[in-house]
Image (cartoon, rainbow, N blue to C red):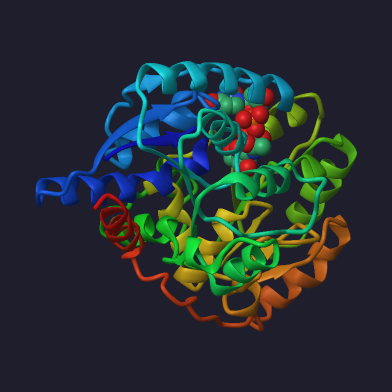
Length: 363
Ligand code: UD1
């Protein structure tokens, strides 16, 4: 069975790496699973893409569609056209998409229009906020995919509530956490550690890239100013997403204790998170990693598609009003942050469960 595996943007790379390894293990043990890796090129920089392939030892893709940046429609259209050609030239028995980025949705549509079955890894999660492009990507993908690998029981419930047959839903856990566990022993201390003389538990990590937080420069500056002035003098390490960097470059914002860095590699970023006092973010994936690492996480969003990180884990949603940061930081510095647990099946063996299911399908 030939599987075309799709990767497009940064958060996809951590999710596909362990699936590839599990497929390789399965085929070396005699199964008929084979894969073809297709990179859509949605993210293309060394910083946003190349270094993840190197660090996570992901093989060079068999094809790169090189769609690059653009509006939502331009990216979607570019991927649809290029991925249809790819599928016609190298027809697989199944396409696997992961996550919720534009590549996930566009590749699902292209495959289904050619009547090729699609399996979605991380299916069924919902923020119920339709203003997020990712929510549209999730809903479209899940409305036409054939197989649904879920990270939580709740994601399965969401899918069943839209009429998906229970036998199409397989609760497997979280492949991003497979990657986390597989790499904990090989994390890399980043250069900034020595440059700023960081010590464990004595600094914060921040990342922001969602349009709701960064596209309005005034709001962005208000947020960063509150952060700068309320961390008890502790440094803040801020690997900066290109979208945020672009917005900030047009302003005169200054902060001696906020250290803006180019996007870090996976091994350096997780090293920083694991040793930090806490994380401030608007990412979804990072809330999963902080939950497993037991690190306090303040999320600047009104909703989350990963409610288990709040209900079970160490994450708290504080909304997008910058002033909400103040009480959250106070609570963190008073040592009053909740401690969390690890959600069921986030155990490092999710990709093995996915591949076991694929082996059954291939028989
Ligand atoms: C995308 C995902 C988002 C994910 C994020 C992680 C969608 C809808 N969104 O958002 O879910 O959390 O990736 O990064 O798919 N750029 C570069 N180099 C690159 C890629 C992008 O400089 O390699 C710049 C471009 O100027 C681009 C901007 O970053 O316009 C935004 O990239 P884009 O892929 O459009 O969306 P993200 O905001 O990264």
